[in-house]
Image 1 (spheres, rainbow, N blue to C red):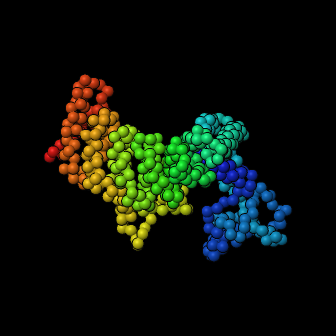
Image 2 (image 1 turned 135 degrees about the vertical axis):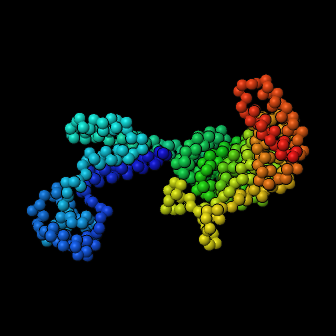
Length: 454
């Protein structure tokens, strides 16, 4: 459970306990008084237990005041003060909630209950009620200290993030200072709650503008892109926010400028993937532009392994991605905030509200089929890592299985695949232990060869 959620549960629990322990105990969840009085059978029972009495004639510890709309149990003892018109309900002994019971309930409802609470519960039959309540109070005080510490840490983190963002915005700050500040912010925004804090303090907009600045130091732009990507990753709400800022367009231009050789290219590719995944509007925005840019990246002879992995991985993922029309439910929380968004009438089941990724069509063109096929030969000649070769193999198989590329488009890759098959067989023969990954790739190569030659 996230830190903010824990803090809120503790805070609300404290309020709840303060109400029950220090205030009047109100019983709810029954028929309202006016409804009881409308029922003839119950009204007879009720009328026999209504008394008129002055406030000085009864013990307030045994009665609690109720308003005219309060819900009360049927047949409860009710007294009316004829001088003030106030109504009171008698608190039955069986319905009283003791301070110890309420503390116990709250402590057990908190996340990760204190282990000493269970130990105390086991001793309950061996100690007096006073000793049991004292033990609960000790645990309660400990949780209050934890609550205060969590709130202090949360406040300190937000202040630190704001100071770092001020460093990024400073006109007098050096590029080194800005990169250093963004690096720390990136580590913070990996946490979902801190990512939302970053958004509310304007951090996402700052990062988007930094990426868009053509005159900015490429290292600062790269770190801004990286921070933005980490903040919105797998978060539809924040993905929607940065889409409205035009972040995917800025990232695409940064990728085109930095390509696959620079740090800017690597970070822009990472952030672009984070913004696009599951984001239908953002994908529609870049569908007409992303294909040529990524083809240029793949076409670079010295593109880094990390960029190649992310680029080919993006092709493979969006080739099979299905996106549902969604919107944010302002009254929900957590997963409940994301609901199906229905357009043009009623939906016939969940499937009718979902569509294939718009990028699926982008990666089904002849240019892309030839590019993925041509990578096999290039990767062997450039001595790229086996991880990259495996990712290209997986992407090629996906494009064929999804019928986005014809099998014949991969026939030119046959010589390179045969060479890779030979290399892997030799490796597995020599290294009989610790070769699980190589053996798995070899199996994929052999299966793919059967597909393209059949």
